[in-house]
Length: 147
Image 1 (cartoon, rainbow, N blue to C red):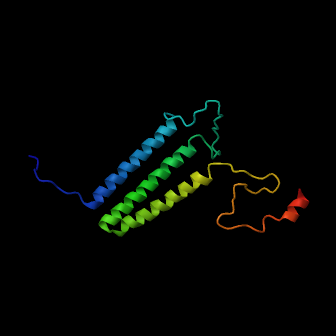
Image 2 (cartoon, helix red, strand yellow):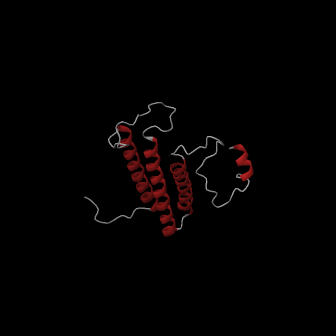
Image 3 (spheres, rainbow, N blue to C red):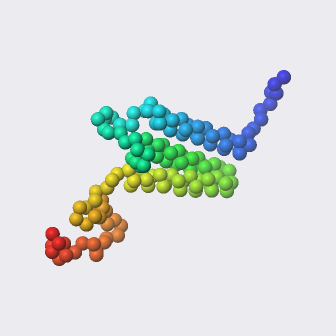
């Protein structure tokens, strides 16, 4: 005969079950990208590189975005659990997930484009000098003599 009383779940069970659910959603999204069910580009004429050493494989950037989103949401979830229950493990998890999410965001922002490299100097043209100005890099007299 089934019991008619409700049993409350311990905090650890709730945390592990939700984390497992998020991880399964992540794996499902990655599998959708790997199988080609979600088109990764709108252009069919774009050549697709199938080499193993190519970091710009057709699935690299979408999977990087999905895993960055996963780690960011997991960091928020751990931080919310820490604020509610005050356990140190949740804060350590939030710091770890946040670090991985920030590395992923850094890679998405700065690692997905080839950059604009100067033919003359070899420097990246995307640098603006913010927040520090590089006063030694540009000299009107030197550049006038070189060019």
